[in-house]
Image 1 (cartoon, helix red, strand yellow):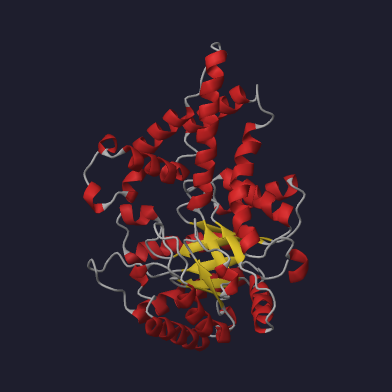
Image 2 (cartoon, helix red, strand yellow; image 1 turned 90 degrees about the horizontal axis):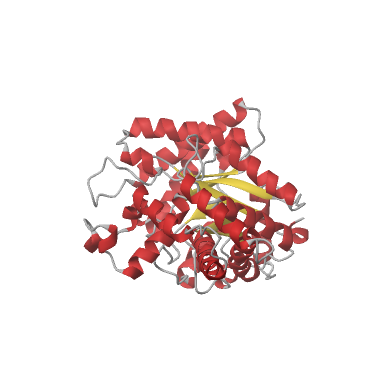
Length: 409
């Protein structure tokens, strides 16, 4: 399997020659169903697929998916075997940096402690076979609110984490891996072009000084107009960023690509990769909501069936988890879940569902839902997977990934 940096070099070369451009799709594996759908999509479309796993999702404590790094990769490989796919699948770390795991903030870890934890997680990623690490030390919870982390601090911490990864990689006797740096978050202070350029210049100088020139990142993350609530990709900003990073042998990678209105503009402007996460697990929720409604209709004519009440169970698990509070607007602070509008409650359940798919009651209700519906449909689970795949197909087609494997090879 080729290194991601080799794929990036091919994409740059095609763009320079004026050939059809490609943007790599990076799926955030925020549920087992999303992971399965992504592997099946890669097999059906014959395309490389990246998996960007945050430490909230996958880590030594199981994250909210229930997977350690090794378990995540094992499950990915199991789905590859299920769908007879031997093509390239790239497990990657997303947002590896201090305080970017929610638990580190909630537990009030010091800088030293959170860095120690992140380094342990990076080692676990390497041991599991991750092929790319996103190094993102752009958050500093020790700063006063509104205070921007100094650029050189971001550079120094980026180099420290890359140096740790390289030291561990060599200790473990592993082949070279690839890196991704930068952030789409405004708290990183890297959205200003002059600051962005300075970050890259200082990073290159620092890596060279440490004998780490070979670790130069193949992806640079930057703000391209999208976030959790914004779906318009800024082609002008993307073009300016492309002109900055491509001479360095890198490509821009966009995060928060979910529900983007103009996905075809990604390859057209030279964006090398794009992360999509919440959209796919939201589609999982919507598919299950439709199945719940179908089950309700079925039970009207089959009164002996014990209804799963899946959506009710799911909402209760979301509320009890408290994870929905993370997404409250400032004017909603202090409100109970039941005090929010129906529209907001529905959005919060859809958005927060990814945190509790592994809840025991949710798993039990889902099994019951599938069992009931199997009386009138061939495979309820396959219906959910296919719905998620339909959402993925939008990006696979727009990014020119369909049957792209032979081109990369």
